[in-house]
Length: 478
Ligand SMILES: *[C@@H]1O[C@H](CO)[C@@H](O)[C@H](O)[C@H]1NC(C)=O
Ligand SMILES: *[C@@H]1O[C@H](CO)[C@@H](O)[C@H](O)[C@H]1NC(C)=O
Ligand SMILES: *[C@@H]1O[C@H](CO)[C@@H](O)[C@H](O)[C@H]1NC(C)=O
Ligand SMILES: *[C@@H]1O[C@H](CO)[C@@H](O)[C@H](O)[C@H]1NC(C)=O
Ligand SMILES: *[C@@H]1O[C@H](CO)[C@@H](O)[C@H](O)[C@H]1NC(C)=O
Ligand SMILES: *[C@@H]1O[C@H](CO)[C@@H](O)[C@H](O)[C@H]1NC(C)=O
Ligand SMILES: *[C@@H]1O[C@H](CO)[C@@H](O)[C@H](O)[C@H]1NC(C)=O
Ligand SMILES: *[C@@H]1O[C@H](CO)[C@@H](O)[C@H](O)[C@H]1NC(C)=O
Image 1 (cartoon, helix red, strand yellow):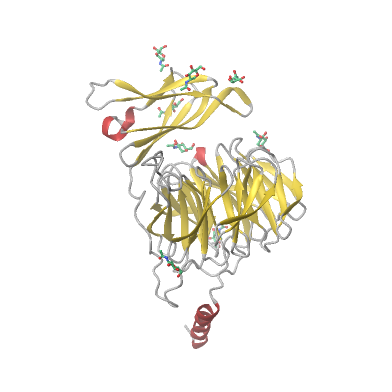
Image 2 (cartoon, protein in one colour):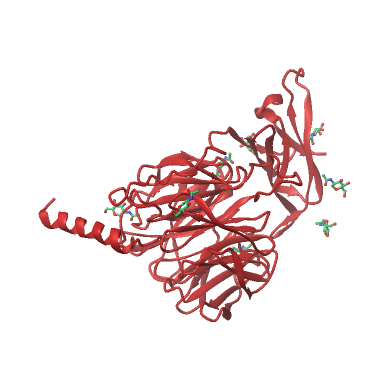
């Protein structure tokens, strides 16, 4: 290292120390700072009701922030005062705050990244889902799926300031890179609402998205591409934001979850996690108006990849395997998983926050304050089974260790519609006797096939591991 390099590093640190860190957040254009000690990756873990805090420089899980009791310990108690169902994540551009949504209790929590402490908790609209900080690093815009509104919250004071009417079922809010425009997708309308941030009014609407249901979406670093994922139909709408036109609809696959972008070797790539295939699909898109070209699928190390985010230097992509309680670290150059970490239980979203804690070169801070172990190191088992006597129906069974009771979950696929199914398992020490675990009706029709249904999330709680053989689980008609 030459003397001038030392000088530059010294001046950079002086600048960071005196003016506050100027970190560029992801997704970012080429040239942003590399992964550093000051950065954190966060996952929102639905079942353990936690946020897992990860140090991306060393791929270490530092611990979890417990937002309340884990499922379903005490949560149904009338005296329970905590929040339930850790789900959505966003952050402020200055890296100081994380926004978090608890979907069951409709709570926006703002967390101080420096020491993992809670700044505010605000009650927002019904079935609030995903939120993001506006560029003032103070107001948080929250999409409330059970309403027609985006709530605007003062994230520091914890007060709802305003409500912006959009189409039915707003699901997520994203801001343009200049912070002047907000985009909102929906779960009850095939539209994208475009909001002027200054006046807080919908100024334009893109119609004709591939489905009425869109849970997640992502905007590229150049602000010119928006990919809207449709989980129910397994498609992704590709939008050119320059012309506000739909470029194409990609058939990405069953249970398409979250999109993300990375710029690799000067080219923009779109990534989409596809839960039922246990993979992330990668597409190359040369310009915002060109039809993306499929490049490859990255096999996940686990089951049901869901949230995905990129590092600011575009070198790593983080995708969380919802049913394996793991986070995959993908190398952007080779497009393959290079590391897998054990995180909290049933993670949904993941975000990367640069400059979340001060670099130790500036001030000695560990960023591990207020962290615990809730939800870490718990057993989880997945079995993909064929439904008994069916030539097409399958079921993904997930069993998770909780406190006292285990969580038994079924995702049924291509079932017969309006038909009752029963899950059974062989009881330990019962001479091979098969006992009923739960029964359910398959009532959610599959798009394009009226005779078929899916059962996206059938749940039961029982002491499973202590009493049953996990390899004996079967599902059949009642
Ligand atoms: C976290 O840091 C803030 C800002 O320095 C401080 O006011 C607060 O007391 C700290 N909270 C906890 C719980 O450590
Ligand atoms: C998904 O997209 C493909 C390709 O555009 C299209 O052929 C198909 O009809 C779409 N499926 C649904 C359910 O909309
Ligand atoms: C994950 O998806 C792949 C591709 O569909 C499939 O072969 C595999 O069985 C799946 N695993 C489970 C446990 O669902
Ligand atoms: C990027 O370039 C490097 C060096 O030429 C190459 O090894 C790598 O495969 C490329 N990656 C992608 C995704 O194009
Ligand atoms: C399910 O059935 C298919 C053939 O229909 C077979 O290839 C597969 O091994 C079966 N899976 C299990 C877990 O039995
Ligand atoms: C399934 O049941 C619902 C509610 O009773 C009914 O509206 C629907 O038509 C049924 N679907 C089929 C394919 O029978
Ligand atoms: C399924 O539907 C049948 C017929 O409507 C009803 O009797 C039964 O209670 C339902 N079972 C469950 C588990 O919802
Ligand atoms: C499967 O089919 C066999 C033969 O018809 C029948 O005896 C059995 O009860 C069926 N099991 C289930 C779960 O449908």
